[in-house]
Image 1 (cartoon, rainbow, N blue to C red):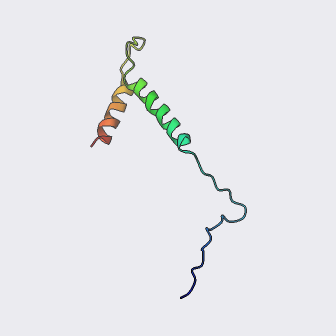
Image 2: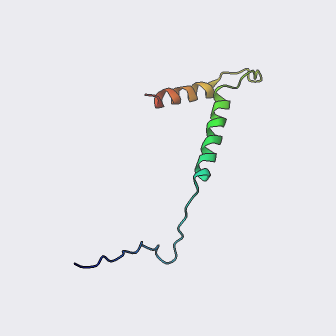
Image 3: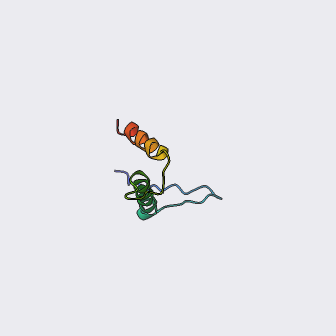
Length: 68
């Protein structure tokens, strides 16, 4: 019975850099983006803007499109 040989993991080519990110390096910007998006969508009691809420309508339509 032949003995098993161990295969080596492929090494990156010379001159390249292998980057690995921890889970929080992706999660924190995603959470920050979601928080800022919520602030844009529902500004609360802010009455400073007297014009047409075009940005709110645009984000509402984008969210409605993505919810399909």
